[in-house]
Length: 71
Image 1 (cartoon, rainbow, N blue to C red):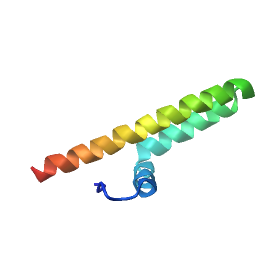
Image 2 (cartoon, rainbow, N blue to C red; image 1 turned 180 degrees about the vertical axis):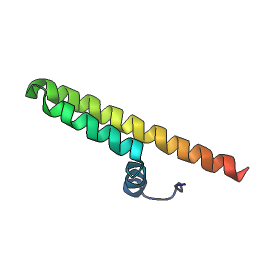
Image 3 (cartoon, rainbow, N blue to C red; image 1 turned 90 degrees about the horizontal axis):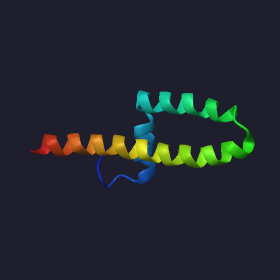
Image 4 (cartoon, rainbow, N blue to C red; image 1 turned 135 degrees about the vertical axis):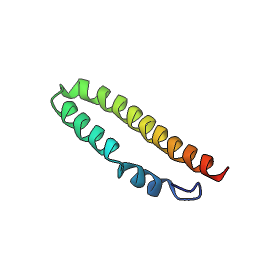
């Protein structure tokens, strides 16, 4: 569980410790490296958006379970 008052970078690092996130990043980055550089730049922007979305989903799921436990 991650408290709301914890700085973003600490929350991010905690979520990256999740094996599913680590595996997702490890499989996505090598795929980008094989792309044409011009396409990879566009893909990188998409990857960053997807990565932020994945982190937010995980954070929300951790926060949701934390809220549920308080009730």
